[in-house]
Length: 607
Image (cartoon, rainbow, N blue to C red; front, side):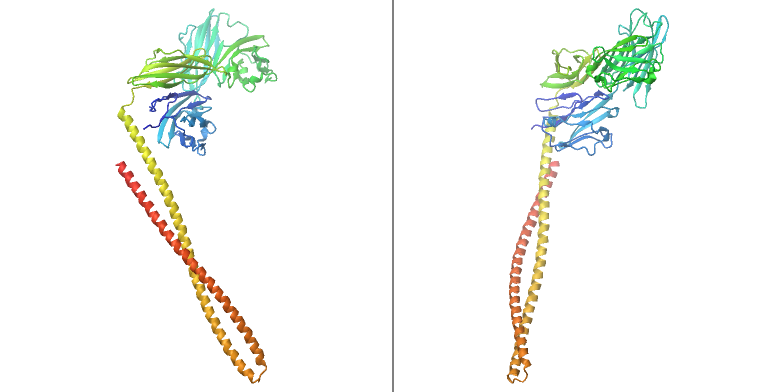
């Protein structure tokens, strides 16, 4: 018998051709502001659109992140922190894909998420780690004829990063201690100073990195013998890297520092029309001719301009922002440029596409990269594995998708890593999977027995529910019949009373009629002697009264007949209702006995 189980993988998905499955898990990492998918698959795949599904965090109140119930979202009790940021795909649910989409990530989203499929009682979890990064800024804080003291600072990191100074060959420089400050927003700011010589070519790199989220940001500055002339100049790093969706600062410093709030400043890209990215003129922004692609995304700091910092803030980066930016200070005719490289990354997904008793063929795929990345397979010791060629596809959005396959042995412990990296933007994403020997047969049999028992229990529950529903209907029907019987019995009693009244009334009428006949005969005898003429009038009155009594008698006879007929019909209906009531009571007893037998069978199976 086949069975289903939830397979939850962070960024790992196992698709077993055999219809069996095992759980594999690791942490899912992403950056603030990014969107992420928390995968949760039902294997073998089945249509679950009409079922219920709950994504939650047990450390929150309410715990509900997203609830799906019988074909629609049920978000009444959704935790307000996730409102408007979660979604499920109906199309994917049709194929057993319960994955949750979570957008615009925040630090508060860090935590363990539970995917719960109640119809099968299946639960699985994933740990989400949301990081935050920013590009470092290098500033010159002291200078003489032969040496330069540089300070590097990078704000808004999470988790806590480390800062390194590197020379042109990538060797770590001896520098002052790193100062780390954690702000009220839980984000870290790191800074450090280094003293270097001014030589013909001395490239210095400040690198800030966080290994838990595989994030690196660095800024490079070229220190030469004529780097700092006696007159003022603009200082910009040669290259700044960042990711799509992030905010970035393009540094531009006036040396020596001076207040330039009342001056003019132009940031531009000469390859665009119009070229203006941001213009500052005599104390205010002048954005009339700003290129529309940058509208609402650029800013300068008045406070920084007071200290000669002409750096441009650019938010919500796009791929089209890639290019060379010019910082132009017209009052001194000074110009400097900085190259912005905007990258795009995503976590790789490992899929098992073939399996036998001793080996596994794995496929790793990662979508949405820019620039073009490389893909590597590594073993548990970090050594590169021999794998098939990497397939690279560039989509219509200029983003790259890379994929590769590797064949590995199933051993007691065999950790395999798929790493995708892009050196130009210092970005690395990787996913790890542990490939072990197949589950022991008796474990699978136990799972099968558990599944069979679950199906049997569900069947019993469904039959019991149907019987209870039928019993409830019969009880309602019996109640209605009892009410109808009571009503008919009351009606029968009333009709019998009416019948008795009619009989009494008829008897009284006959009696009155006899009395009138007697009086009338008496009047006839008296009127024969013709002693009193008034008797004639009395006789006429008596005759009229007799006629009225006879008419009344006939009406009573008709009414009595109708009443007798209605009473007979009521008795017939009443007898019929009593028989039907007995049948309902009998059926109710049969249903109760069946429910009791089902209960006894269930208890015997449990023992």
